[in-house]
Image 1: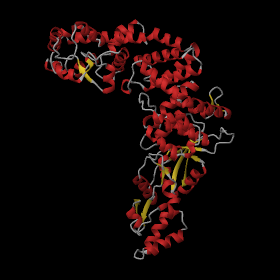
Image 2 (image 1 turned 90 degrees about the vertical axis):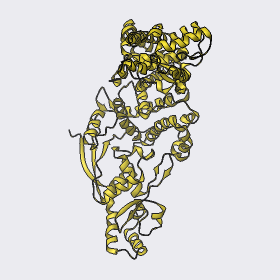
Image 3 (image 1 turned 120 degrees about the horizontal axis):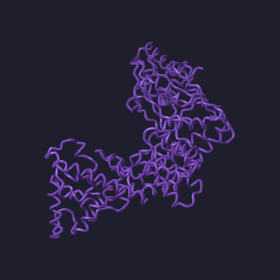
Image 4 (image 1 turned 135 degrees about the vertical axis):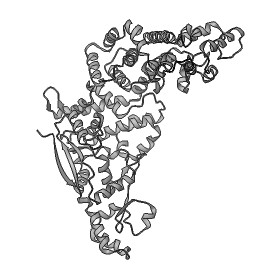
Length: 595
């Protein structure tokens, strides 16, 4: 069976399909990313008969909508959205949406004498040698528009100008190649075809297909897509709320704008989900699907057991999608979830090394809430530990979609707490803490999930910075404190340890106040700790503010620094690293047990 068909259509036919809704363009209500020069260049290519690349559409089944009517969209445009939007704007005069969600016109001018296109400017607008708006000309009666131009430019060669204007009008008859993919193809096949025929080899993600599929489901689907888009955008830029409310009256009239209006006053940035993240959370929580492709199939009405199309399943799937999206964007749900993550010590975005772990944790939180778990404290306990467990074990790296699906199925079978306990028993046994984790800490990356989890553990326990008496790790994370080499880097290099992977090991890192970091400089540990020892005796502050042995011992413990530091040299540095890796692993173990 053929997986696709290839044909050509004139630009005019394509634009008619767009206006009638026969082709769904999900991007038409999103900010238009092309600048006017790209639109100009596209028209120039059409005028000169240059190819503009194939458009790719995916045949969409005609399914029922929420109001009982049928979807008007028959084909989803999955590649060529910007080109179609540009043609619709420049040749039809349809408005596009700018960054502030205001609708505006993009006008392209044309000079018949030079056969050049230009972006519209006041200077061009005043110059009669230019057709200041191509859309107005190509949609006007050809004879009268041409005569008006020639009357305004008596010095122009009439024959040349007329020939140029005829070519301009004929842009609408320029042929554009269309590849139509069959409706019954699975997402993996659609993705593979797209990659192979796209000249730039730019892959579309499954989430892109999902967003296109959602938008193709009539006005109901279009508003659901906007709900996702606007929620994600407001999470990052709350100030655009008024622009959305003012400039998208259709969405503002729906119940969805009110559902996300709380974001206009929200300043938290711990979890700023992208549309891909939202779709993943929805798929896991509501449909038990780890793969976005499987979610798209469900929304398409695909029955996995019979391998057939079921219109009723498509209708029900969209209703379920609406329900879970409203759960995802709900203020209480979202804020209580982020508070749960913060309560585990992950108080800043830079501590979170896995967005996938965060997505699964949110899906789990929503699932437990909707299933009526015993109490909120129990839900937060499971979610908190599951999140940290998945970070430590790298559970959602690699084939994470498969892991999503396996975990949600296991949770359905035995419950979240039992599923968590089973994972802990198999992957977080004593061998993990005593052997595997210390070995994993042989890393030089400050983005290592183990180092970031160590910092989160310190934030959770209220630890102070290295050699600090009052300044906490939490405050330095939020204010960007110094990552200090406990055994100074330059001291190690001067002593012959030149391997970056050695002197920059995370076991040699600690968060430190800037003045303390500066005071330590390149001193050997025995030298700068000598200053601290003298301070304990005299009380005269020379390095930090610690003035008692008890405070110093407590500070070493909360930073997992071995007492052997005071005698560590370049020769014993490897032993110091091994000791500290063990102490850091134990610190994380105790922290995990306390969650």
